[in-house]
Image 1: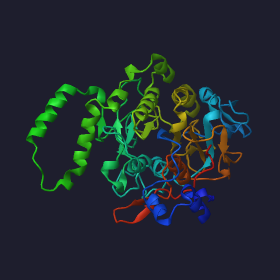
Image 2 (image 1 turned 60 degrees about the vertical axis):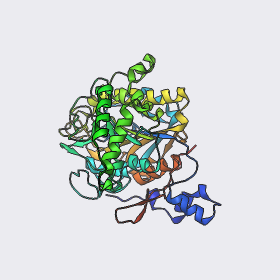
Image 3 (image 1 turned 45 degrees about the vertical axis):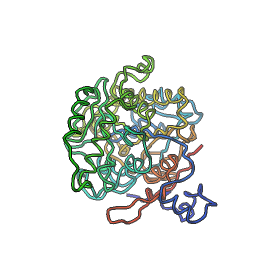
Image 4 (image 1 turned 60 degrees about the horizontal axis):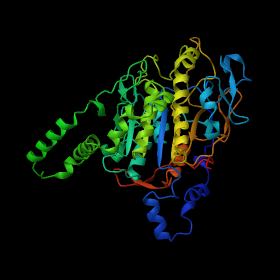
Length: 454
């Protein structure tokens, strides 16, 4: 594989530039702020990640190649958008109206073509720690939502990080990369089931992960049990041993006994016009619930825009090894287009887009070559992601791929640079320090902030 220079490989000037918002502070104050994760004032109060599990084809979405041979460009045509000079797939007509809000990055790449490890790259900003199918371990690097949870506090009864509507699964295995890793179980983003919506096709396993379905909760009965438990409990001799248990029990109780999260979960209280805007599909309902949870004070919400298990490569996920074009145009792109465009429109109309960062991530792109099953295979050499709101300057494209959509052509960047950008927009210095289990100080990101800011 050809190696490309990323923004994270630049000189020390960029490390200093990432902390430019602290210029002029006394040295002691500067170092304290860096350790505590303070950067410039946050542009975004919250973040919503739309994760396209399986590997969204950049050719059929954000980076069409109409001038390439048909065996590369495929069956779809590009369409004009709200921004002169930017084209997207013909099957993203609703999002095409919102490119004035989007920063499309067409030059991101990494070096791993496996789903779980590609997801690890994109959700941690770091190279996967081991080969093969990688279930989560406590030695893993913490996910982006987990790191945000470390530096951001949430109101009482509001979790600092949430995943919807289920965990990411491949080959009947939970995947490393979306958990708290060595930060500890306390920082695992909790999984909340979306209360309604037509389900994704395919299997959506939870495999024993802690999943909360708030709608199936009997508040009066649970409150009675909670009072009984409190009357029976006695102080423990080693309270540290129960810290994680007590944390999640108290958080669950706070959420379920009338918190803002429980109110946000009640989608039936939403304006019927907004429900219709997002659509009846689980993808649309999950995007709407993400917006309502950030309104309730959750700092970061990750939405899985796919079926939960990629095993078998069928169903509503982006692993389109076969029948790529029919699956995309008939199901995947229309659902994603409606949910993502509704989220942008809803946030904009509510006046909260400027303080809500929306990020579209995926494992990797798809091969330039169309295979014998009319599909495209895994391809990490170049792919596209999208950012909007939360301090992002819309109507722009960062970087480009070559004429075959095979490698970065200009402004190559990697997942670490995307993470540095997200942290910066959330007011977290990319050089903020975390301590691993050995007590070693590590920066939250090795990347450099991309020039996408308004």
